Length: 107
Image 1: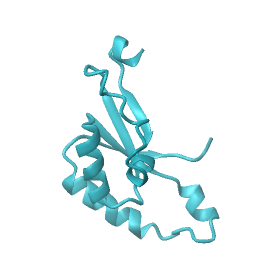
Image 2: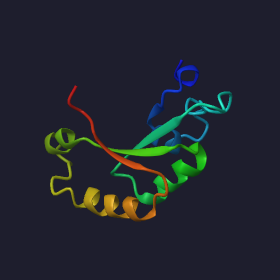
Image 3: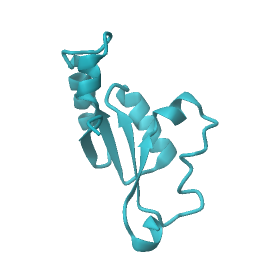
Image 4: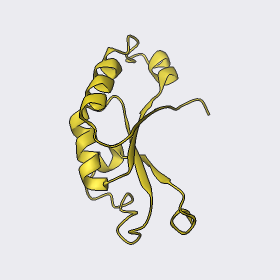
């Protein structure tokens, strides 16, 4: 439907495919060459994985998502958000497609 209507289709978090390269659920463009595609990855992932995502998915844009509430509630949560801050700087400097910062986890 997205391809037929010329609407951007954005995948879920590509982290699953990075963990399991045999996961083919992200191969949405292989049979849909005209699909306007975006993908996303958690901002906790280093920019190297973001670059790998771009190489494997060839999206028009990359969303990086953050889940503030999860970090605040988890005992092992990173409450200073320094990792996100450092990663966001790296993404902004190295990612060559439009970058979108997206907050998730609030229903």
